[in-house]
Image 1 (tube, rainbow, N blue to C red):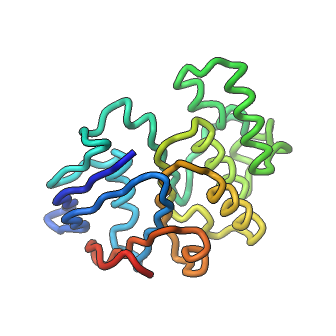
Image 2: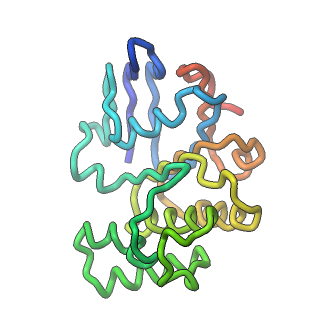
Image 3: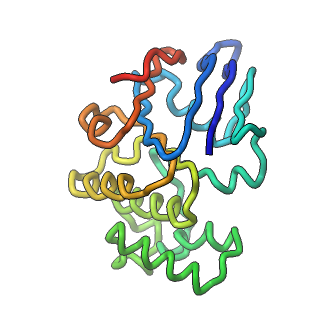
Length: 210
């Protein structure tokens, strides 16, 4: 997928919090999104995901406006992800059932994803009983299981242990062909993981180097 951003502004309460004149994003690049608190990073990802409308300008996806079919190929994971009040297995299989993937195939995908993220032992545990690191891994498994074209991550490794961080980084690196946008305040992680860096400050795109 190619995402083109043209003259996009996001305005809250008469204040412009994001201003991106022109930017093109493409698969299979891993983009790091960096900047100080309040720079507009989360807003940027939410606009791309279609979770918030732009105030001015346009975002196109393969040359077309956002549509229901396009949304099915994009997934967003927040820093504090919301999980359904169900088992880990039910959370991960949920997007496959929404897309009417045959049950046998869906089950196979879920089992493979749980193995990849080392959460097989959590299969039947209620989502409300998970630690912060376990919650992040389950949320990432749910995001990846339907093989999206675009993965948007808002600080997916904040406040979790180093072993879990290393595992999540390996999984993200192994997802070939996907566009990933990853907000992080960890400079070393950005250098390890990302192909290109988008640096935001006060809602403006300053540079693509870090």
